[in-house]
Image (cartoon, rainbow, N blue to C red):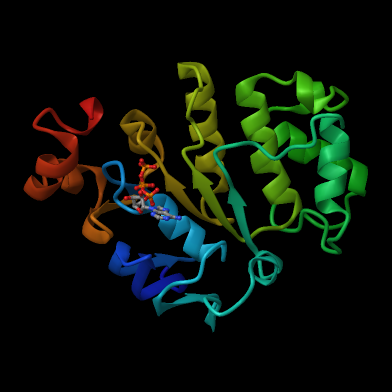
Length: 250
Ligand SMILES: Nc1ncnc2c1ncn2[C@@H]1O[C@H](COP(=O)(O)OP(=O)(O)OP(=O)(O)O)[C@@H](O)[C@H]1O
């Protein structure tokens, strides 16, 4: 767990002179699930945009699996194993769940290698993956007819089908019911150790369910980092984000 899988080193991101990220340093270990929290405008989504190559830093360096990726194009970073789930789903609504997974998986040779032992037929693996995210019963349903929660889980399954080693989730529970949020936490917890995951979230109940280490951003920088308990106690974090009532009430 100690090997650094992703490193952001002195990152600055300037939009026409406005510094959305101003000297961000972040290191995430292999197999770790890191929660990224902070007030609106702190730079969390921009940080994910930088990691997946949607934008390039004005200065600084991003390293993934020991290699500099901040000079690569988005498709090259995706090919290197970085998968991003956006707030707006990108599933193919006309296709079934099964077909969506097949499309996501078709370019890979090591079928679902991260999740399931080799030797199982592609069909079995695909079904096991659907089961893993709770979509086993709706494999042949058109994606356009899935519930909001199911659509989000399909998005996560698509990243797994692409064999993404580093998974970036931007507010995965937005718009979910309490039950759906809890189920998403279960999925995230089961992925720990097998994938490196960064989750940007405002739902502090969810963060508490999944977070081992939490990084708090404020004004484009890292304000604090630690366990849920440490973050809850941190005066600076309470001041800018959590208020005085504790993380459960943020
Ligand atoms: N393309 C852009 N051009 C100009 N400013 C931008 C751009 N993208 C982001 N910003 C600004 O950078 C700052 C950080 O935005 P970002 O979306 O990363 O914050 P965030 O922490 O994800 O906030 P939220 O929790 O509201 O999603 C904001 O002030 C935002 O307006």
